[in-house]
Image (cartoon, rainbow, N blue to C red; front, side, top):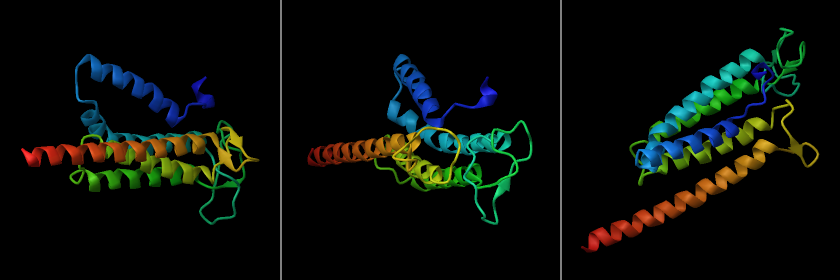
Length: 182
């Protein structure tokens, strides 16, 4: 019953990441290089996927009086009908496109393999946490509704991204020092 939703981007990342790691190892590919190539496509894919959320009423926002509110009228929609809601799906599309543009900027500026993917991880975590502020669909909330499950996951993804970026950056600097001393 996929039309009732329940799929999440983070769940998709977990499944795709596991399958991707298996494929990379099986074919003896450079995993960080593959991740860098995939990062812009992931951002663009999220933007397109959120358009699907808009079409089905999934990932809907809180009631608002903002002039750009959207109102769902189709009874098959997952969103509540007849209420002006934050267009969180559109916020997410804009955010994912911003991440895509950011990755385009950093594409030729990356310092090490995996750097682009790690920037994607951190930027997407921030974008997702921001959009979550305006969402109102059932997705798990804590601290009396202040924090969603996706925001908690985003925090860990962001921290892991920072840790890995700093680790790989130090490794690259050590490698350059060794290369320069030879």
